[in-house]
Length: 127
Image 1 (cartoon, rainbow, N blue to C red):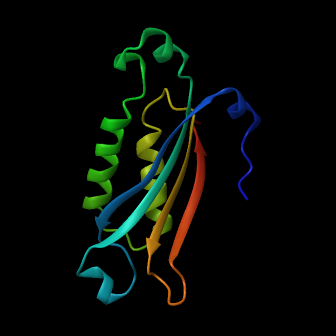
Image 2 (tube, helix red, strand yellow):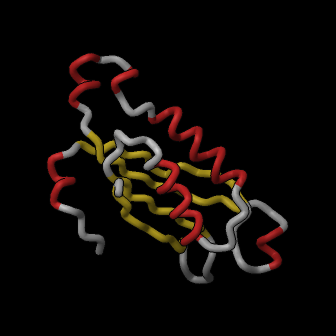
């Protein structure tokens, strides 16, 4: 279980759930010549009070634009491991300095027999 830093408790969360993206991912030859679907779940910690007060997108995290950036990055990636891909997505999200922390989970459905999915989840904060 991931332990969340205490300073995140005072922040708000934005969730992007079950984002489906097709990408090349995997270590086996049979995985390197075709795209597979991955499912991405992201939680962002930020302060939404400014956006709530102004009701202006300029004061908010533009999660539509962020989602497009994530889709473009993941679709173009060529990672062998989920561990690498989840780190890349986390770094991309944290390029926005208004985001204090991000929890990213990427699942690879059908990766193992007898399992619906395998996933990697990480928590990263601004350094």
